[in-house]
Image: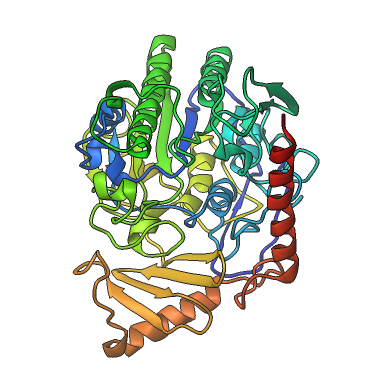
Amino acid sequence: MLRKKAWSLCAIAFLSILAIKPAGAGKPNIIFVLSDDVAQGDLGCYGQELIATPNLDRMSEQGTRFLSAYCGTTVCAPSRASLMTGLHSGHCPIRGNFEIAPEGQLPLPEDASTVADALKAAGYATACTGKWGMGFFDTTGDPLKNGFDHFFGYNCQREAHSYFPRYLYNDHDKTWLEGNDGKTVGQTYAQEWIQNDTIKWVRDHHSKPFFLFYAVTLPHGRHEIDDLGQYADKPWTKTQKAYAAQITRLDDDMGELMATLEELGVAENTLIIFSGDNGSSFSPKSEIGSLFKQASNGLRGYKRGLHEGALRQAAIAWWPGTVPAGRVAEQPWAFWDFLPTVLELAGAESVNDVTTDGKSLVTFFKGGDAPKRDYFYWELHEGKPIQACRFGKWKAIKNGPQADLQLYDLESDPAESTDLAPTHHDQVLRAASIMAEAHSPDANWPLTGPTAIRKQKGQAAWKATRDRLNATN
């Protein structure tokens, strides 16, 4: 039985799972690969020329590549929470990174309903591997309390900053990694263990419908890699070499996953969605951005902002024989569309009391048009709260509670170079109305700025991590 979240907001579509078909034939396997901080322009299929990504390029050639796929918002925890709950960041219970000591982040609340809840109720085996970041194991945000049968990887975002951590979690149990002290580069590369567990789980569960949320930490900083490979002798900085090697390692692991599905004979019954959790992470003037110039693909902005370069991420759908091969789609969709999409794919015949801001993408993924909607909405609570919305060709941004609203025409100005707010008063009023309607008040996420308790807990969390690492021998 799915846990339920009650919203009384007219903008939300109400779905209900009253009758779900028995598990069995006709239900596709579903894999969502969420790469931490990969950008559109990091991949060859989006124009990157210096980093090799042959497997993701093949995935794009055999599937559909999206130019306007939007993340939940532009930092880790709230983007993941939007994906898992089907709620945009005006309704989602997590709307910013909220650190908790000694380990973990603000947990999903007990009444949250997730994609994994829905698919488990529909008879799917479910697993999350990689990075969770939505609550520690002794809280309501425990992944094993939110629909997942199995978890392997990092629970905490702070721990996931190291690719040579002291331990990973296998379900609730710590798996200690040989030669790693948590402070310096060690012997055991975490992604190797995470990839191995992921492939093993797919092999063990391919005979029945399964859902895998593969939340890969690559290429998030720190930029650490166990093997620089083909980039070792490049005339680049150490960080630039490591970043390129991280992207290619990510590509290699995607190739192994696709090859495993093909070997097992289930590729034609498996939908993979590959995506970043936000758009570009770097300024074009940064050490990484200046070399790998394609990161934002000509769009303005990067991580922690709400311009298009921060919100549009790399996204590819692959389902041989179902998702059109070689298609490039410009119509927009967003992370909160994933929940209603999987409900349709799982064969939900009717829906009751499970809420979502999203719309099913099944028809769109199969070659049709994207679903129509009134607007997309984002907010982010990192320092001063910021808001943005897209309605039709119009995009509006409000960079702080007291800031003037900016307005852009994405059809003629996708780089958001000219603010049209002074000359388009009606559209400014429409955007302001959307922002007011889409924001549901939440004690943790007031539009006036960070609460005292959030600041206090965040400082305590980082101090606990620092003290623990300093005490490690």
